[in-house]
Image (cartoon, rainbow, N blue to C red; front, side, top):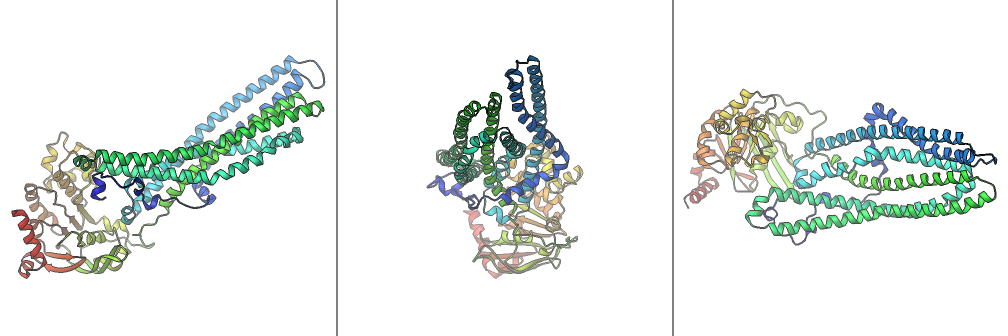
Amino acid sequence: MSEQQQKGQPRASHERFIYKDDEAIEKPFNWAQVARLFTYMKPYRKQLLPVIIITMVLGTLTRLAIPAIIIMAIDQAIQPKDGGAASLSKLYLYAGLMLALYIIQWAANTYRIKYTNIIGQQVIYDLRADLFKHIQKLSFRFFDKRPAGSVLVRVTNDVNALQDLFTNGVVNLLMDCIQLVGIVIILLLWNWKLGLAIMITVPLMFFVSTKLRKRIRFAWQDVRMKQSRINAHLNESIQGMRVTQAYTQEKANFSFFTGVNGTNIKAWNKASAMNQMFGPIIEVTSAVGTLILFWYGAHLIQADEITVGVLVGFANYVGNFWDPINRLGQMYAQLLVAMASSERIFEFIDEQPTVGELEDAAELPRIRGDVSFDSIIFEYEKGRPALRGISLDVQAGQTIALVGHTGSGKSTIMNLLCRFYDPVQGAVRIDGIDIRNVSIESLRSQVGVVLQDTFIFSGTIRENIRFGRLSATDDEIVKAATAVDAHDFIMSLPDGYDTEVQERGNSLSMGQRQLLSFARALLADPRVLILDEATASIDTETELKIQEALKKLLKGRTSFIVAHRLSTIRNADRIVVLDHGQIVEQGSHDELIREQGTYNGLIEAQYRFLSA
C-alpha cells in the first residue's frame, strides 16, 4: 500500500481504483460452470433428496389437481352439463377434497422449504470453506497483486449471492418446469384448440426476454466489480485510519469513498432495472393470453365445444401457467447473478499457487540446519531482478546477519528460504536437500519467522503465543514468554495470559507485540530462525533485556538476522552485506570494519544519525 493511499489523499478519479482481478470476465454463458456449481449438492443427494422429491411432487400434483376439481365442481355440482339440478352434496364433496389438497400442499411445501434450506446452507458452507482453504494455499504473488478487500468480497458477498439459488432456486426451477409441462398437457387434453390459442404468445415472450439475458449478465458482473472496489477501499481506509487522521485527510478520503459508492449504486440500479423488465414482459404476455382465453373461450362455449366449467378451469390453469413462467424469468435473472459470482469464485479456486509442491514431495526430516543459496536469481517483476547470483553457505548453528540499504534484497533472501517465492534460477538447500522437493508444511514447520510488522490476532495472550505450536502446554507457553522477557509485562495485565487483546494487538505497545511474536516463534522450536527487523520497534531498554535471552535461544539454531542496529548484528558469526541484489562483502564485524568498505560506511552513517 502506498503512502499516498494510506493517508487517504484524493485520487484523480475513483475509476483509477481498479485491480486486474476486478475486470469484467468477458465469457459466454457457461452451462458447464453452472453444472460445476451444482456438484456441491452431490454429497447430500442420498441424505435429503428423497424427501425433497416426494414433497416437490406432492406440491406440484396438488397444485395441478385443484383447478381440475373446480371444473368438476362447476360442471357436476353447480351447473351440471347434462342439464340436471345442482347438487349441494357433490359441492361439499369437492370442497372437502380441495381442502384436503390444500392441506397436503401446505404440508409438502413446509417440509420442502425446511429441507431445501438445510441443504442450501450446507452447500454454501462447503463452498465458502473450499474457497477459504484454497486461498490459504495461494502464494505471496497472488496477494501482492490484490488488496485484502478484493479477496474478502469473494469469500463473503460472492458466496452469499448464491444462497437463494441453492436454498430455493433449484427446487423451484424443477417444480415450475414440472408444473408447466403438466399444465400444457392438461390444457391440450381438455381442448387443444383453446390450449394452442393461449400459448401462441409464449414464443414472442421468450424472444424478447432472450435479448435481455446477455445485458443482464454483464450488468450483474459490473455490480460484483463495484462491490469489490468498495470492500477494497474500506479495508484500506480502516487499516490506514491513523495516518488518515494524522494528516487530516478525512474529507478527501470520504470524497473518494462517495465516488466508488456512487458508481456501485448506479451499477446496482442499472442491473436491478434490467431484472425488473422480466416482470412487465410476463404481465403483458399474460394479459394478452387472458384476452385470447375469454374471447376464444366464449366462442367455443357458444359452439358447444366446451362448458363454462372448462372455461373457468382454463382461467385457473392459465393463471398457474404464467406464474411459473414469471418465476422462471426471475430464476434466470437469479442464475445470472449466481453466474457472475460463481465466475469470480471459480477464478480464485482455479488459481494455482506459483509456489507448488511436487506430486511426490517428500517430508523434510528433522534438519540439522545447514543452509545454502546456490547462484540465486529472483525477480518480482519480469526483467527486474531483485537478487543477482546470490551464493551463500551457512553451517548449522551459525548466526548470519544480513545488512544493506533498503531494497538491497535482505528480506527477499528470507522469503526464498521460507519458500514464499521460488527463485527464477538457482536453488535453496537445507542439509543438501532442494527445498522445492519437499512438502511446504514440513519445511515451514522447522523455520521460525519474526517480522518487524508483527501480527497479533484477536483473542487472549495465551492463544496468540500458542499459535506457534497449537499442541503446546500452558507451562511451555510461560517458559517461552519468560525466555524473551515477556512474562513480567504479561502478568501485569488485568487477566495475565488470559487477557483479551484487540485486533492487531492495538491495546499493546509496539515493543510488547514484538515480544509476543518472539515467544510465538520460539515456542515452535524451529531449527532455522529468521529475525527480519525483529528488534526495530523495541526500545533500547527492552532490547538490552532480551539480548542475553537471544544468545541462549539462538544457540544450536541456524539464525538469520536482518537488522540495522549494530547491537543486534555485531555478535553474529558472519555479516553479509548486500547491495542491489548482490553480496558485496561478508565477514565478522571487526573484519568488515578493517576493510573500510560498504559495511563500514553503513556503520558510520548510523553513528552520524544517532549523534545528530
